[in-house]
Length: 92
Image 1: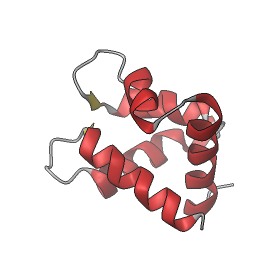
Image 2: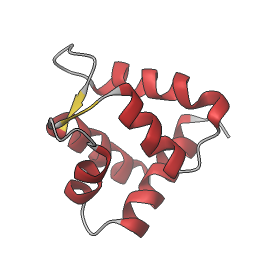
Image 3: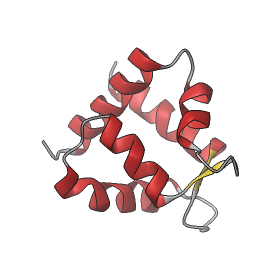
Image 4: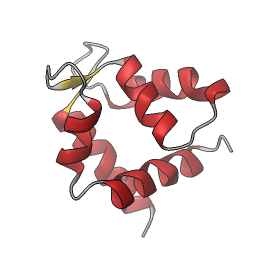
């Protein structure tokens, strides 16, 4: 369990099974309500998605690196939506 596809699949399952919309999932994990997911907030999402604690830090850093288009080291709604769209496309 470490392949990108496996991790993205677990995130998709979490969002699909526990939230009505990706917006609802984003709002749930955006604990401070600033409209952006920090590394710690992403780690909580990964924990909920049953990603191993051993790799959570690495994966959260890679997710930020891969989807943070404005370079603020946070994932905002638009960046999160791009990630969700990519996950959805890969699962087809």
